[in-house]
Structures are given as structure tokens and as C-alpha cells.
Amino acid sequence: MPAARTAAGRQRRAPDRARRVAFDALRRVSSEGAYANLVLPQLLTERRIGDRDAAFATELLAGTCRGQGTYDVIIAAAADRKLSSWQPALLDLLRLGAHQILAMRVPAHAAVAATVDLAAATVGERVTGLVNAVLRRVAAETLDTWLARLGAGLDDHDRLGLETAHPRWIVDAYADRLPAEELAAALRADNVNPPVALAVRPGLAEIADLLAAGATSGGPSPFAAQAQGNPNDLEPVRTGRAGVQDEGSQLVAWALTRIAAPAGRWLDLCAGPGGKTALLAGLAERDASSVVAAELAPHRAVLVQQAVRAYPRPPTVIVADGTRPAWRPGTFTRVLVDAPCTGLGALRRRPDARWRRQPGDVEQLHQLQVDLLATAIDGTAPGGVIGYVTCSPHRRETVDVVADVLAGRGDVEVIPAADLLPEVPNAAVGDFLQLWPHRHGTDAMFAAYLRRN
Image (cartoon, rainbow, N blue to C red; front, side, top):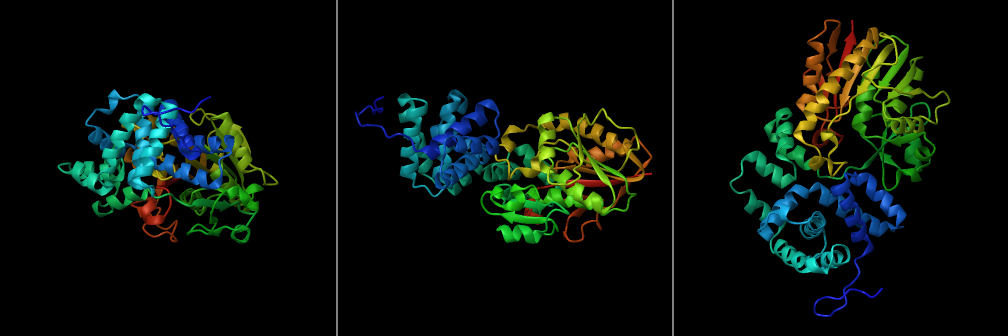
């Protein structure tokens, strides 16, 4: 098949593999609702993209997804045209080009030329002139200059949203839970790629095993380390004696086990993908207890089984709806409910999530979270303890859920969280735990701990 030619008769260069795979992944994210952190590794493997190109494609896709809202404002200003008038594939091309020009170490002329070649190969030669013209206008100013000009006249939260690439409603949600002087730092922390966090399985491995395999030290969690590169290259991870888990998730699960409670059966409600189950399983053995892991989605239940596969006596994993319990009331002495949430606390790991989620999602999830916490309390024996956890700092997914559940019953008391994690400064907010990337280097995990009377 002959190579494409420009209107002037010059032969068009084929797009490089890294940019092409980033574009194809972005199209799946934009048009099919795929998750960037899942679809790109699959495409990189299928196309056998080498390490250097894979790193470029990863930064290109993640950065484009993360900055999408800000880039859209800049592109619209550069083109003096509403984005809704363009076909989605063309807009994705311009977003990729804008990220290279404004936020990557790619010379502007190279970013423009490469995006034009990519446009010709994917959308068609007819759009190359438009892509060239718009991106040249984008490149005429630095990112800081664009932000200063487009942010002029906006209120503080709209300007912060533009500067940090967050929708206004997320800026407002963070502002509701943080001192004003920390708001900008919290939003900017969402744009910093975190290291790969690892957790040893208690009783199966020690931190020293991960360090000997090539990992580096972690933070305050006694189970934590960090990986450089592919974590599966490390023997403890490959064999299931350790796994990938954000340190915030480790800390909120660990805190539940530090509260005095009778030995017995523990329940991990909403257990998938299994990181907390694996941590609890090892800690339960030390307490002469056992763990049941319940997960609604069968494919996620399989992930839980994978996470605990190295234990000689692994937890019992069941497929069950947490709002319709498959166990009798008062069965468990400890219950952890890591409720489904918007994931606003893990935006640094999920670059497309901030634009995928909408304010209405919070209210839809709120009632489910209330129902799951009520189930968790009902399933707890007198004297037992409950941990309610979300990876979101949003008020409606955190303190409001606890308040709504406790308002309807008198058999539960809140356990003040201030003394549960003394190793982590500034983690307690009132009676609850609230971790933040900018403060603690973890996802923004929330946790409330309760005792059944």
C-alpha cells in the first residue's frame, strides 16, 4: 500500500509507534469508557512496544487524560471555535498534541509535525491543515501564559481548577474538607505520578524480603515498600507473598486490627481486588481469627483469590451482595467495608477519573454506602468493631454516610481515630481518619471506626 502524500506531493511520514498506541488508547477511553491505566498496558503488550516507547506512550496518555479539561479550554481559545463542532477523534489528536507542546520535553515543531502525521494516518489527510494551524497557535504561548490569560477574571476555585486540571465540583469538594491554605497543594498532588506501592503479606514475607529483591523503603506502614519498574519482576510479588497496594489502604486496614475486639471471624465486605483481604488474612492468624471475603462481582472475587493464593489457609472468598447479606446477624468480630465510591482520593493513579465522574455519581453512591455500612454493623457481634473506608474525601461519601447511619440506631459508638495511627501525623480529623497525598504521600483515604454495643 503506497504511503500517503501531502497536498504538495510530499510523502507523509508514518506516525511513530508510541504516539499511535497512545492515540488508540485515548480513543478507547474517550469513546468506549475504557480506563487509561488498564487499556494502555494491554495495547503495549499486544504491539510489543519497547521500554522507551512504552514510557513515552504512558506519559503521553496519562498526562493528556489528566489535563484534558485545561487543554480543552486552551484548544478552544487557540482555535476560536467550540469543541463540540469537532469530531471526537480530532479533538483527541489536538489534546495529545497540546500535552506534548505544553507539558512534555518535546520541541514544539516536532510535536506539531508528529501530530499532523498521526492525524493523516488515523482521521485523514483532510484534517491535517486544521491540526497544524491549531497546534501552532497553542505553541505560540507557554502553559503559564495560557493559564494566566484564560484564568483572568475567574473566581478562586475556577482558576484553581483551570491551573490544576480539576473540574470545579471537585475543587469545591476538596475545599470543603481542607484548610484554605492547603487546597492548591492538594490539587497539585493529584498531578504527580505516585511510586508503585507494595505491601507484604503478614506471615508470608518481611520488608527485608522486598528490599533484597530490589524494592525501596516505604512510609509509616510496617508492611510497605516501593517498586521501580514492573513489580512482578520482584520474587515476593510474583509468588503472592507481597502485592501492589497503596500505603493509605494498608494503614486504614491496619488501624482496624489495632482496636481491642474478641477473636473470631472477620469480614472484608466489598473485598475486590483483594489487597486489604490479603493484609487482614495474615493479621487475623496472629489473632487466632479467620477472614471471610465477600465480593459482588465474580471477576473481582477471582482477583481476591489471586491476592491470597500464597496463604496455606487462605480466607474464604464468596460472591455475595453486601446489601443482602449471606450470613446471620452478629456473625463477625471485625468488619471492614471499603465501600464503592467515586475514587476522588486516587486521582493521581487514575488520570481519566476526574473527567469521567460527575457530581450526580456522589448522590447515587451515597445510598449504597449507607446500606453497606448498615449491613456491616448488623453483621458485627456485640463488642466487635467496624471500619468504614472510602477512597474519597468527599463529604457525602465520608462523614455524611456515618452520620446518616448512626442517626437511625443507638447500638453503635464511634471510636476516636486520633490514637489509632500515631505513626502518621495530622491523620485524624475529629473522630475520623483522613489521609491526603500532599500530607501523607498516600491516596486520600477516609476511615471511620465504630464499635457495636
